Length: 196
Ligand code: SF4
Image (cartoon, rainbow, N blue to C red):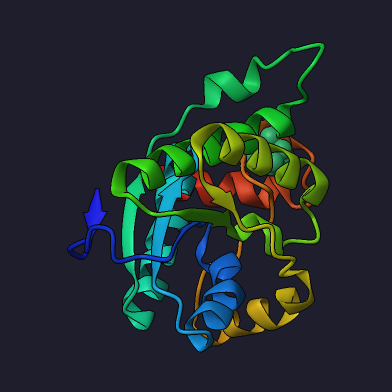
């Protein structure tokens, strides 16, 4: 799915986005700095599919408001995350790696020299693992991975998301993370209603 016409090679940065609320603060900083952004959504870890769709729709509310170009791939792959059992790579390392690899591939395809991710705004994510994966993938692809620490703006970003009326999720994304949420019973009811 492509939202808005993309302007090939006019971008400074491909910014992988996991959801609308996490885009708020990084987008604000980048726009203040007059960076030309292409937003890229590809999060097969966000499960089930109705939740993936809901997060993408809320991201689109924000990209439209900010007049940002967006390329979105709504792929959802719960079986990979549920069955993940690897002695070397944790589920979260695999999850960061797959999404950042897809972002790098898209940047190469479009001739964009640098990429980053809104995952770097969240204090709940493993920053070291994200930076390690992004840096490794960037080296292999001949790109720059921008490992800016956006976390000081996390609360402000969440406030902005509330103001914009965006849906703010209460679990990371994969079905195993839903099972760990304190709100899982309510979330499951909400998801069942969405799926009807
Ligand atoms: S907890 Fe979050 S980062 Fe870790 S595998 Fe699940 S969706 Fe990915």
